[in-house]
Amino acid sequence: MYREPQQADRVNNTMRAQEFLLEYSREITAQRLGDQVLNTFRREGSGRIRRVLGRDLGTQDSEDDTIEALIRMLEQADPSPNKQYMPWLARTYIKGETFFEDVLTQVREYLEKFYALTRRKKIPAPRNDILGYSNFGDFMSVMDEYPDPDAPELKDKGQAEEIYQDQQIRVIMPYDQAAACYYGQGVRWCTAATRGKNYFNDYAENTPLLIVIPQQPQYPGEKYQLWFDYSIGNLPVYSDDDYLEIYHDRGEDYIIDNEQTGQFMNEKDQAVTLKTLKSRFGASFDRMIDAYLAQFPDEAYRVNKNFESGQV
Image 1 (tube, rainbow, N blue to C red):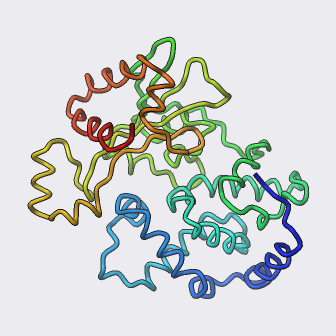
Image 2 (image 1 turned 135 degrees about the vertical axis):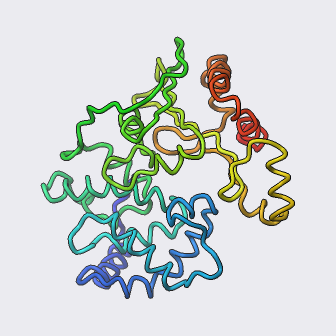
């Protein structure tokens, strides 16, 4: 959680703040932090890179142009007029603990909340000092303790389908962004973002998203989002024949570098394994999978790949 900065931290933070915050400069930020931002971004993998940039990051891309594009996107996550949070955003991102797409979505929403609360003097010192937060997770956990004065009231349930329900769980498949936001209220998923960039369409166009809502939650707000993707690069794989075709066309190295399996997250956008979900919900989890595959039989290969890939 938040820790009050020690004297040495205060000195370093003050120096950094003076470097950047008196007058924010995109050019200086790119010069000082751009290479680290780009290197961290490259390590995220082809699927996440493609969702952020809308394309693969090729060798033909200019590093300077890519850095500028990333810095510009980070600026969009800073709600302050003078971009006073940009140094903290960039320095915290390059620690590699949070994906870029999540900075543009969940972190942005929490920063907007932080900015609104600090302007209203609703956050006491030292919690109102952004430089006291060493990572995004701790920052968001502290912000969860405060009501959001500008939280949108979601009335539009969008288009969704309940694909399974029993005494243990209720499973919703959203068909549009409005439904993903409505049923994802209170979570940190990029697919449920209401003010930052929302990535619902980027995920759902590949394979359906499932929202699992426990009927008897173990703690307030317990939810899970399941995404049984299996792709290589931008190519969805539905069978061994698909896999072999990519192997012969692109080679083994391409598959190693671009293979992507699904994501299974709790309400705080923390990864959980299929084994954990099976343990949590027992036979209800198996019946949910059966119901999903009964409706989408073509997804069976991809679901099995996720069970085989170490997600268990």
